[in-house]
Length: 125
Image (cartoon, rainbow, N blue to C red; front, side):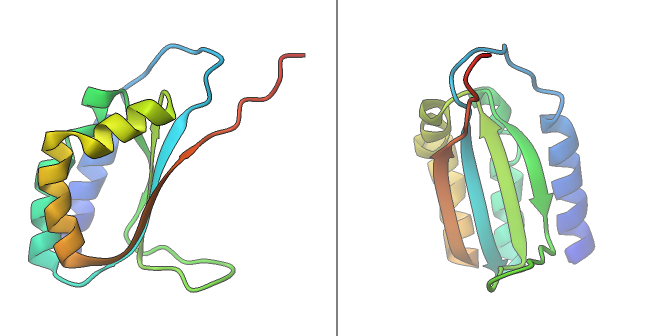
């Protein structure tokens, strides 16, 4: 099952990394997830439904590691980071009807956390 989930994740990541958006001075928005899979079948359903959604909201997956390790703390087994043009875009993705439907499978099949945060834009020199 891990091989299937990893294969799906790799395919999604490859698809999503081709998405590009214009450079501007807005700080990018990030959706960061850290969780442990408790029900592989439910999680696979989440991946099937959620995988193709991020690009529709200007997002791209920049990290997806099914076996995350940490230098400090107690990490969960999955670490994922999706980058969006802005926090508003990340929130629009997270609250969209399509992702809300898919998210139910992740919530039911995992234990952990998801945050949305703004990135840093250095001042112009």
